[in-house]
Length: 547
Ligand code: BGC
Image (cartoon, rainbow, N blue to C red):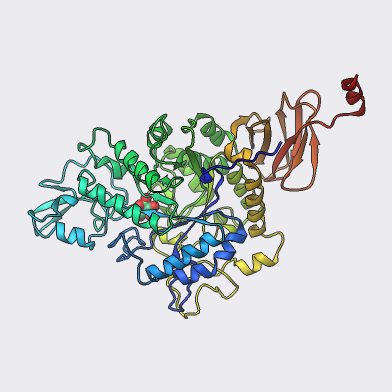
């Protein structure tokens, strides 16, 4: 049976694609990506099949943290275009059926934001209380996030003699969300961009954002509930996708416990990190255990799944030994590691460019329970630039053609090392781009994957992750071989005896024997998505029924 879900919960089976306007496509030839360039490539994105764009910060910024240091929440960085260009881009995206969300970075501002300039101008400044000031550097209750650059989260301000809190870099003072004026202003920012067509936000650094609310609100989570209620009033169906890198037992609170009235989706950092451990060990165990331990989000909420993003591949939820295993497998050089907890690498070079393994990893991503999120360039296997500073290694410009195709200018905003490009991938039917397109198409057709109940199955071989997704009597079984040897999965599909399994990625069918135990051969790094259909009724069975 094919399901026909029509719902405002569009994000349940969305395919999210994260990009930075600055590095995607230059439309005016100055070497910097911009909204005009991005607008020219909307058809490419729509053709890929993605359904929702996540724009990294595009607001005015001194750019000391790649735009995560904002000086004006109500405008577009002039290097990237104008508000007019933004609106044209939104119109085109909507015309092609794409939704757009954007980074909401309101844990902090740039220290050059006029609010902070005013706040630090004197202890009696009307905006003094918009930031978090203290007479002493409080005993440091939390670790610094960027240990390569900071050793405290408090910075002394010689002008007023007090210290201000900065969870991240010292040039990013934390906003004081305990101040109701600040919370109102944040809601105004949301309202502004929603009015210009955004369908929601990727909320930066959520746990840090809400920890500053206390003691103003009885429960810091009320702040998230306030924001979500505000958005729902303004525009039903808008989403908050949260960056909440916490263990599962703390995560549910961010959805609003049983209520589901806070974040709509949370990135699953735990399953992501265990997936990398599984990939390194060629053993499905760690990922399978994460999926089994993972709590169900409240109804109408969902996990967001990813393998890589614009930051370091953080491995902070693993033990030191586990982290070292992943470093040894995928980033053995010190230069590839960062902050003592992660890798500043993109996925394809981590797999030494092995296309079978890369394709299997993305098949896994799309088949796992949770909305898949891609980072731009993943669809062509864009590599990294280890000569770039820190996390910038994975933020190189998109490559459109053999010559680069990102800009007409001689010097692009960032170096563009040689590498794969869109034009070549489009010409080759076996390319990674075509594979990702196929996965997206099948994922969008297979609502069981997004809406169904998920069960991890025993696969009979440690290298194989097998799981099934069931919704309204429809079932898909997915199997992935994490190792480079042929193997055979043996699955117990009791209840599906004599059903037919149709392979959705290559031609072929398998019949489930009367015992319910099915054997599935898998190539090295092989992957299969199998749709279950009811057994064909034999003429004998039919005549028995007719009597
Ligand atoms: C973003 C980073 C950024 C930091 C500070 C993070 O969570 O993903 O890229 O540096 O927030 O805004």
